[in-house]
Image (cartoon, rainbow, N blue to C red; front, side, top):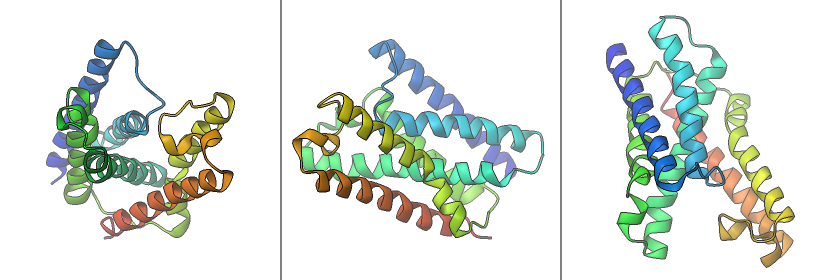
Length: 195
């Protein structure tokens, strides 16, 4: 079981690095304004840290397990948003949603992380405080993007962040929906982590 977890962790790291390199080659940069790329980069960093403990047979600190849960929730938000919202609603060409590095960011890496976390990782108990801590990266992302949209009108990258093109209450509502979605997904995923 532990060997499969190691193999899948290394595979995840390699696929994420390949996707990032492909992004840089094709676009000349990493698009940090997109939650998709941020969630994948965050998951890569957390997986590298987790792999250190995994390969050295050291006890994984609680905070690292919380960050793994956070990474999984962020990747699932990316996967579900693209698969269930963007593709059907905007009738995006699947080659756009799943082409090049997006194939890894939107599909392969989230599914691989989910499989590894759910079926091969040691189970962890999380309390309510842990669940709220695990939503911190998404909250930070939201605060930064809202601030950027206040500073630079129409910064984006998502229409619901355009604070000048909608009433203030809608901006607040979108923030709450985004946070609550992250929290609900985190709670559901934490149930998969119970011993």
